[in-house]
Image 1 (cartoon, rainbow, N blue to C red):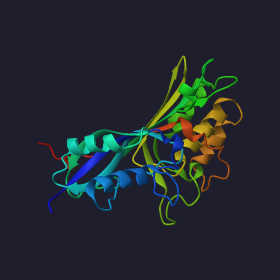
Image 2: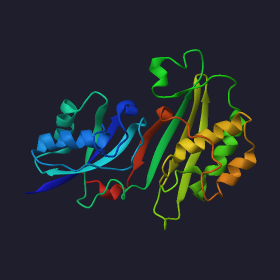
Image 3: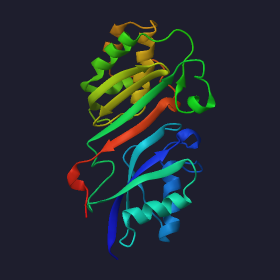
Image 4: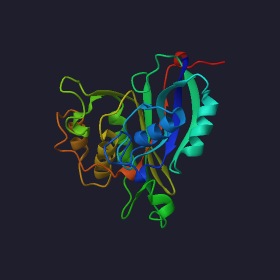
Length: 258
């Protein structure tokens, strides 16, 4: 039977999910997607994500690859999925791709944002679900900027990742193309884009940056962690609620256009 390969771009509120990846007896985004897609297709379905977001992490640009019968055009599949998916998952767009497309291995970059909410309404339920509420003295913006500047480039991020996050022979190198903080009246946002990310990497970075920017740790600690072989000296990772996968980028040649 003729088939199509389709990229789905997902929005999801990660609060009530145990992350992206299928896990026994747990509600996950991948498991939810595969269940709905199997119901549509009448047979087991596989949904491959660009990355495995952790429990509580959100997405505004998670990419997933699916292979479906040719009568499922991207637009038809998107509409059918959105009619059946729960309220905390939504397909923002769908694109037909070349048959060899792989959502994880075909990606050239991924972009995350981490948001910190400040002000009197920081703990409002309309904000704290998607940001870290901040109490007390504000972080020093200049210190945050200094930390972000150190991250740009290629580093072995073992000091900012969960142990065993990659195979033993992996070099743990990530190339960070952009890392910067934006300060507004209602909070701070870190925007970071890289070719790949290790497990908890952004959250470890944010947690340590905040410790430096509030005077709890010196700059030298942050610099040393960029050279470290383990995360033993890293600060506690920032909570998952503030993290959003914003975008996954692919080479234009992987897209099929009418």
